[in-house]
Image 1 (spheres, one colour):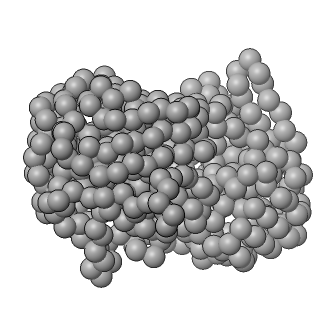
Image 2 (spheres, one colour):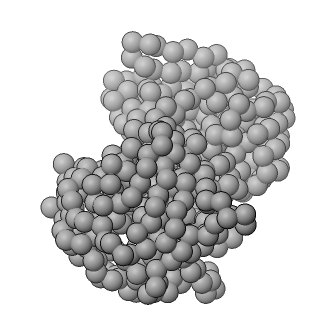
Length: 435
């Protein structure tokens, strides 16, 4: 189990460039299975979860060529479908949440898709019903082996249909879209997720020959085609990492420039940080965070009531950043209620922040009230364990602002979502060592 040693209390400065988007990568990489032609993908982050998926694709028989940093060519012209039934796949596939999105393209192109119960963050129940109900609507037969927790769908030919999704699931929408592009006839998906990463997937599929309209809305219409071709695709910068660096700059009273952020794809993220009192300056396609010498003050609502920050489907606030928002609020002036609606275990890391001296009231599994210190009192260094990717980075940001030397164990969780994070932080002045 890896460990970070962090000496907190130092101001940082300089520029940091966000990695390619993890959540986009997990969709885009699965889409290479939809064609026998070459697909080149650029700006792929070098992180554990993405590298696991690339290894899974290789084990499936996809030819993979590394063309440069973050750039790969994929050719799925000789896929070994039998591998899906192997014990090795049942083991490897269960270790990665994103492996669920292999099912849609495999079902569409080869008539069958199997997956063990996927792993990932321990942040509460993350059901798969939306995925499989979508496949069943398209005409697939579903089976589930309870003893092995092994799911399967099969269909000789998928047929387009109308469907109203029970939730605007990002991965569910992506999976159903990838299945529907090769289905016979027209598929209409209402209550579809419309996150920028899903828009990226749809645009890539359209370049490959798919016929998807309504991209960016919650109503997608897909005319099925017989086959897809190759393409070249560049992934967006990771909006969660961008939010993490905004929070880091504020908490450490640092002046930072975050490069090439794709402003138009950030949605509510800059606005939410500004509601916490953080100054965010747009410079071209960069974000500049000036030094907050006097700290930052949380805005109240117009009637004076306490601010509530809650997650919601896009274009609402992404749930992945609420852990960061919560940590940043611990040193703000004022109070805020954090309402994590989507996952019931994501706030359980706050006990570590309370140990560090933060004033947080955990109201229930979904809500926490934060009373900011206004930098009158610094957080104190401690020893902690990273429970998931986002909470891990939140604790890391807390440690970088704290007085003394903190220890974070189980940093493999952080490595799952953040590329070379310790070296990139050292480049802007952080005192962090990987043990």
